[in-house]
Length: 439
Image 1 (cartoon, rainbow, N blue to C red):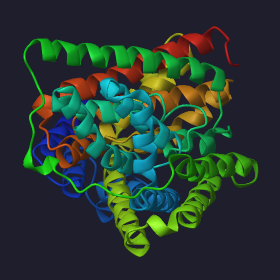
Image 2 (cartoon, rainbow, N blue to C red):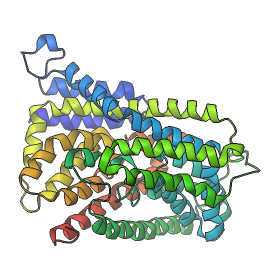
Image 3 (cartoon, rainbow, N blue to C red):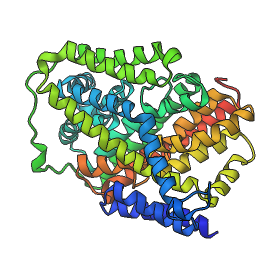
Image 4 (cartoon, helix red, strand yellow):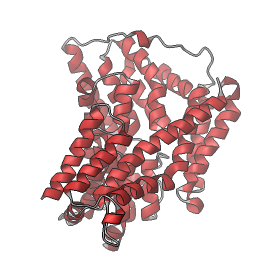
């Protein structure tokens, strides 16, 4: 009982300190220390019996293990996103979508711009940075409350695209390593769920915005809204080519290279962007350097919370929780979805949640005869739900650093789009797979 209180208390501490603005690289090991102390784990390996878990080993194995497995993928993705941004290709695609839809469809334009870039392999953080300036212009023109911009950015990036079949985002590729599936696993059900999440989420977001407008909320301009606009952009259709390169290469080499195919694909996207748009670059070398720095920060923050999960994983309380979740009556997919969602919530990271949960859960469920493709798609979708609790790295970055909003103003809509909608999508996926669809 005390151990379980430690797990919940550690998560609460992680959320609280993160919302107070402290760095995850400090917060995560502190929260993990609380969990370790409450569960009676020795602090150092020298104080533990041979083969017994301890705080330091558990944390550092989780931290370093994630970097070992995924650094090059993070690096290639971050550089690709930055060169798309620096060349103006990301802006060109986004503005093209806005022009086709019109200014009156401000919210839909922001959502679809994010969706196209995300499904093309651009990093979620880069998508938010790239689309935010246009989102401000659109919301200003439509006179909509700016506190809904973070929800619009996140909805287009982290729901019906990030975890869908075929997505080159890392959340769709981690299960490949542990389940022996492909990025297109369960595509029929995935397509249905993606359409459901898109339709329901957009309706709900529009409803919340309309309600706020009816109460008198309007767009409030800031000095920072006056941003320098590029005078020359590459052709939007030409700018889509690097996105297509990422998708085609990743699928072409999946069978022979597995998850490493995505590194090759993203690198191909960087080369294609340079070849097609090199005259539009402001500073290619600087973009690569910024992408590299961004990759280090992103994977360090994710690894910090994976390290927290590594300590959690070493506790008896976690073993008890996993035993409960894997023995839930009914479809084993429910247990898998719950386990990944909860661990993603504990770590504040969808990729971190999968990296911790799947090595433990995949052999168990595969031995039970669970369909690997159904499990892949279900855990992918569920990983993108509780990872967006207030302490998540993407949440904090998008709401505070990019949009300059407060959690109090922006998170209600943000959480509805990124937590509730994916949870409903997970339920729909479990039902459809349980009915035998897509299997």
